Each structure stands twice: as structure tokens, then as C-alpha cells.
Image 1 (tube, helix red, strand yellow):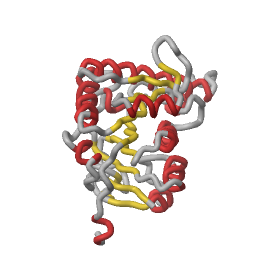
Image 2 (cartoon, one colour):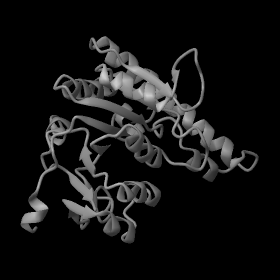
Image 3 (cartoon, helix red, strand yellow):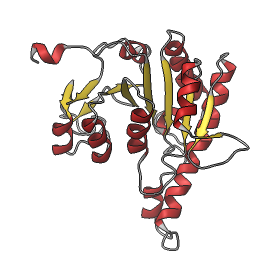
Image 4 (cartoon, one colour):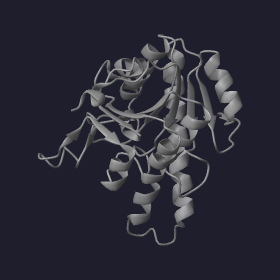
Length: 248
């Protein structure tokens, strides 16, 4: 790696954390485990207590993925848009679980959704979300973009830009970006650093091309880290080079 590649990011004042549905259950399981949710919440709280403003975009794959549902037999009568909306609702379930876990840790989280459901969450308004962040509240963002055919990765990039995050951190189950799934391919190559162009050209699946394109257009760095490893999120917000950094 060149000296340029060794650089670190500036310490963050505000981050957008994208968590997958896998964060809400033990490895190779589905549904919600509050032990897993509490583990995630504790890592977020440690960062918030350092004075970093944190917004969290929810995934929902531990409950339902619209694309996978469409691929199952017997789904012919289900419209694809409906399947995507069902996936968005799964992210709201996860958001409620994380909200209560954070609240039990003496935080004042705010759950905001792109689909209006006022009985359980605030509607997402970017100015209101920024106001919550500036008051030290952890903001949980669920419901994706509120529209089908848009991934939660793209929603993360969009929200990170709206909320003026210093960078986007994607929490995964592996140590960063690899050339292939390291759990399936022992020869997979780890990339400590990539440009957005490289990630798009190599069709690396850590985020979709639309999300990468948004971040590239606005020079928003992306960090990919293993959420199961203690302390990595804290090191990431300090600007340390952990996991994989993707940049211009």
C-alpha cells in the first residue's frame, strides 16, 4: 500500500451507520435476538458518549427481503412493489427493537420512518432529524426511502448526504470488502482501500452501484467494518483505518 493509502479520515462529528438485518440475530439465524440488538446498541452508545452524532439506517433481511421473497415458488401472485414494501416494514420492526434497547441504556433515541406510521414513529424530515442529532439524540431511520425498487444501501447514501454526515459506515459480518464472500471462498482477497470507480467496475456487492455513485458524486467516504468485533466502530469514528475505506 502506498503512503497515500495509509492515511486516515478526520475524526467524525456525525456519522451515518448502515446496519444490516444480520445485526439483529446470531450468525446464520433469522428473526430478532435482543442479545444481538443489545450488543449493537452498546457499540452505538459508546460512540454517542464520545460526542459523535449518530444516525442509523435499518436493514431488514433478518425478517424479510423483498427480492428473495419474489424468488420463492408460489410468489407469482405477489407484485414486486408489494414485496419491497413488505421489506421496508421489516426495517421498522428492527428499528423499534433498537429504539427500546437504546432507551434502556439511558439514551433518548428517535425512530423516524419514510412511511408514515405516526403511532410508533415520527415521519422522516431531514431538518428535524438534524435537530435531533444536534441535541445528542441517536436517530434511527427505518422504511428505506419509502418507495420500492430502492435498496437500503442507496437509502443510506441518500440520508448520509441529507444529514451532512462526515462519512458513511456500513456494518457487516466480515472484516471489510473482499473480492468474493470470504465465508465461501478461502481465496477471497481483502481490500483495505478502494476507489468508488474500482468498487463499481469490479461489481463488488458490499453496496449497490447507485449507492456508490451517490457517495462518489459528493465525495462522501464509506467505511466497511465488522460490527461483531468490539471497539471497531469507536476506532472508525476516530478516523482510524479499520476495515475497508472507499473514497474518490
